[in-house]
Length: 461
Image (cartoon, rainbow, N blue to C red; front, side, top):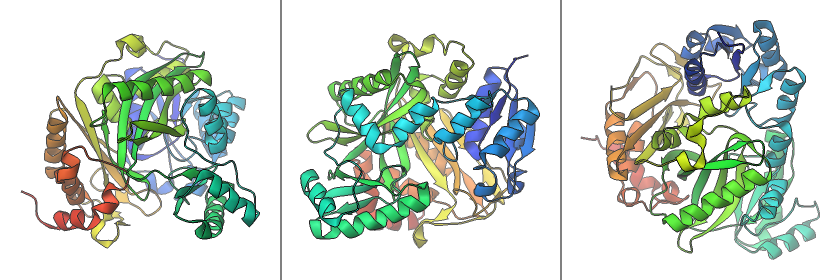
């Protein structure tokens, strides 16, 4: 029996994923849940479960002291935050350290460094990683704001310094629009993150969002596990992700990987993380966007092409065990192609409004080289309290075309009843000739919005 016990400080599909990884390590697990989540699969999967409060995340999953009390009450020695909630909260990571509960992730200092977008840009530049022209945190003086914008150049983006997920981000085309945009972004950032500071960054049209999966050992060594293309986004939230990035030459791929490893090594990163780049594919130039100091939603596609269990490696590192020979750079090899689609309880025809309700059916096919990552089963309620992600469907193929076909087949055979969902929309994306050709970029879903909705409304064969 392991001398450790792992508390999973999350819910849904990522909680299930972490528990499965812990089982491979013979590690006992503790699930936490809000009152409305008591019947979800992750609660039953764990060896123990603790209710941590009412449905609202602000009264349960976001209350650090309740999570730490659950760990103390059950004797948990490790805590895995998953993604979202408190996963990138340096104060919570510090409280774990003070409570002598090992936080599965990097140090509070690294989380704080990379959570400050301005400081992260400085760290990236110091490591020799290209960064987009940008400003520091903006002053409140309108004249100084416009001057900063002229130095960066138009068009530009107004971005929250402390935030993520595209919250508050605005594109500004000319100086006269800038002060108002800065004010609105600052207001939103203050409400969302408790920090209203913002900065400016050059806007790149027809850009792609490509991220490098890295794993650091905390001693200045780090490896990469290739890249993922996450360009297909709606409201700055990813919808379809794949590995490797289509149409990227090996020389460019290697340059991005070396840059990511250089940054991870320079900051002595520990555990799994992601370096996000904005790629100008036409010029084959890339620029640092940010670093995510946690496991990513889309990590399964990297696992499918490399065979590496990233979550188990995270846990082994924190237990001061070797993450394994499969994380030696010379052993990390890429095989085939993998693609992931996020299935949401939502109504695409009504501006993707969430569709909460009770799942009357949730059936997935037994499919070769396909992973279904879900935190629900038939009979569970999808509530309005949390993100409406129902599942991730991930498919591997020897080629990109084969991976797309397998993913489409798996989506076609998935049956969901009781709530609205976006499966038909996802299939229309996979069938689009531009996507099939690998011509992806961050505005793809926006530019093809009407065509994709129209295609989704036609019954698929």
